[in-house]
Amino acid sequence: MIKNSHQINIRPDASVLFALKQMDQFERKLLLVSENNKFIGLLSIGDIQRAIINNIDLNVPVGSILRSDEYVVSRPGDSTKEIKAMMLQHRTEFMPVVDTAGELKDVLFWEDMFAVKKQEVAAQFNLPVVIMAGGKGTRLKPLTNVLPKPLIPISDKTMLEEIFDRFNQHGSSRFFISVNYKSDLIRYYVKSLNLDDEISFFEEKKPLGTAGSLSLLKGQLQETFFVSNCDILIEQDYSEILSFHRENENEITIVAALRHFPIAYGTIETEENGLLTKLLEKPELTFKINSGMYILEPHLIEDIPVDEFYNITDLIIKLQQQGRKVGVFPISQNSWIDIGDWSQYSRYLENFKT
Image 1: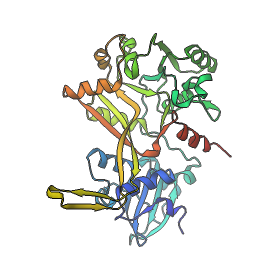
Image 2 (image 1 turned 90 degrees about the vertical axis):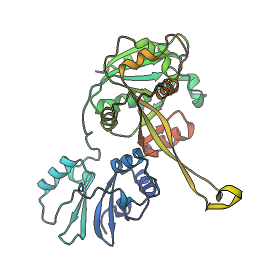
Image 3 (image 1 turned 30 degrees about the vertical axis):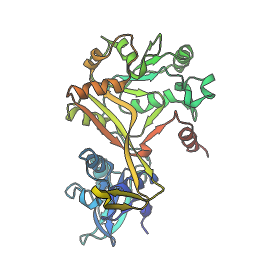
Image 4 (image 1 turned 60 degrees about the vertical axis):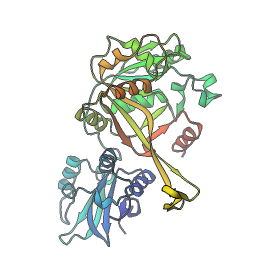
């Protein structure tokens, strides 16, 4: 049996939703589509994201969204050097080995070929990052009675450090941190780290909502910038979100996580005169949830009122009403970690237990 075949294999008639859940379950961003040991293609998280962006029904079979001209395979007899070069070129998690008859012979995994599991990001960028760290973290009480939310521990680091690390991997090292609650403690801790990053603090004298404090940065940001809540972690190549933002010429891009909600009962749909049209047994609903990460263009700071409570959703609704471009970039359910929620925080900590 091919190594980890149960993790990466999927049939062409399986639904896109099933594929997305399989990726989440086994922490993969790529699946191998095959049937009766015949190689059909590769399905990436990018393929699924493009399908979602184009409003394709998640119940359609994965075979309908495969890009057959894009897959990468090696042949029996290819040298290790050739295979490594192909994997680096296409940034693929694994390389199927397929013979001339289309028979699947083996799968070579990135971590085995390069002795590391994590791949490099697609592109580097050094854009400013604004971290909203002024909240009281009421969902994590009583822990936040002692520690501010940005300093909640994650293994041997804090939430802020985890966010720094993720953006550092993409080349970003300029951070603007909005503070209010226990701001002195946050400043002291960050200063004690002696980081190479360029870090500036700006303080709300009163709660200004999830976007109101951005008005304090007028004149300081002249380029596209990221905004992240301080209690969320996003497991995604940020350069891909940035490419989506720029290619679609969005003024703001919302990173949205898919969340699946099973219904414990059979649902009924009817038409006029109570005639049954559809009966579904325990269906599952999928929604796009605002993750708390965004990309904004700098001129939007001028749209934010000064010294007023103003949420980022107020800004988004304003832009939408004015017919301006607001994009939504989807990520899988497990690619969004809401540390501000006790249950998710506890589950995430389980990953660090030995």
